[in-house]
Image 1 (spheres, one colour):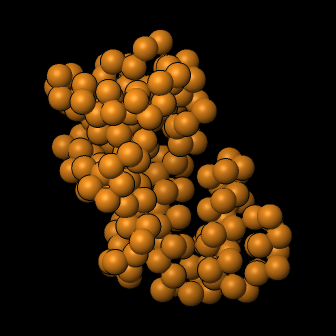
Image 2 (cartoon, rainbow, N blue to C red):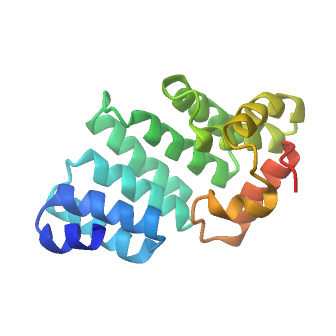
Length: 184
């Protein structure tokens, strides 16, 4: 369906934004998804969803600083957007990948204010506390996350973690959750 959306909407920035994001997020095809989102931005640089998707993809590609900038643009364009919590999570993920754990914590907490059971934000919050050397502070978000997904283990993180291209980002993601108490 995402392929159809980008083919039928090749001149529609909104269709390209959503179709590209789905191709990257659901299908795992970051290259094609990114190309469609970049086309959306070329067609209309005022589509907040395109900036948000672009930022997430840049973070996944290993460019967290550029990704954070793109997500910030999405939030500037649509500060009351119903998906603001997702963009806040993307920002937290970018800071996490950049090793800025205090910033990651702040943005994950913002996302969790709107969506208290947002599993992705809980993982970043727990991992950030653990990697900044405060494993006790990681326990509460880890407990909340484990209540949402009691079967999750380090060995099954690949099913839920973002498609991070850089080996060090994947290692950091896993290491943080391991240190936060996620069982093997």
